[in-house]
Image (cartoon, rainbow, N blue to C red; front, side, top):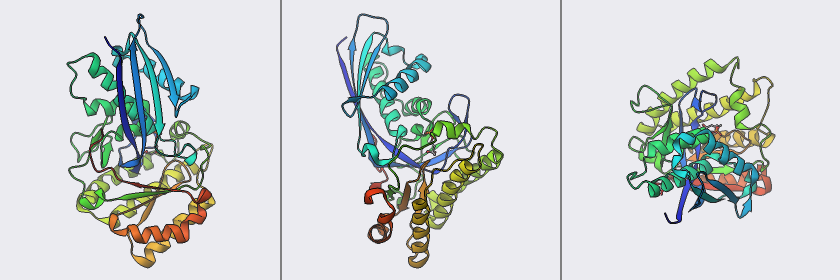
Length: 342
Ligand code: PMV
């Protein structure tokens, strides 16, 4: 066999209904729905060279530099899930990865990096076993989920649903499904402007955050609300109901951080400037009726979500009101991915 060289680009995503709490082998305690982004992505390249051994060796460079932490994460992933990666036997893997967004933007997109890695690995499988064509995107989503739950949703454009819910018959806890066919055109034009409140690595990882949902006094109520919000959001994204969207997105974001504030031990990832941005956005919406809303990831940065028709008004809001709350006036101007992922 000759050397195999593969590349994949995979985006980050922003959840509207949040996945927070898991069980078993990376299975979600409630369904989640996200927008797939287009400008925040990871590009990964793997060179696979046949060796004379029965095993594989791996080297990893992130933006041209060795990254022992990430290398260890990939090695552990491949060992834990070796039943899916038999085709890597006898190959040396040189993995190189880079992000489109700056390192120190406080955006640690494991969704983008792990889904890009999986898409590369599946291309290697396809090259090794010529009968595996084309790449099965459900399998890609399932393997991405095993690396990082939210990564399951990044392999599909526009919007994806991960987790079984009754109104979508092929939905599953094992993998995400694309919602492209049901999404109202207005949501395909959505922008996500990310206000960088802090560029520091978060003090409590998502891994620890998920585990603090076990035994959390509000956990069952939270999962029930997320299930209801999933069903509501599915209707809203079909009909293009922007008010319904705003209500769900903001309630979900605040509930995620409420879970953190009421866990044992409690913790807080939002900062005073996060709240100042939220207040400004709500005030602006009330005054102008421009349908801009916010969501939050597990961190202090604020994602502003709004349709294409509101771009000029929101840009004016960002520049005149919000940049002063951002670290070094930084923000990332992203939009929903509206074409096929390569
Ligand atoms: O995929 P993880 O384990 O990093 O968890 C992601 C959790 C949130 O980003 C807070 C919510 C979500 O659904 O993406």
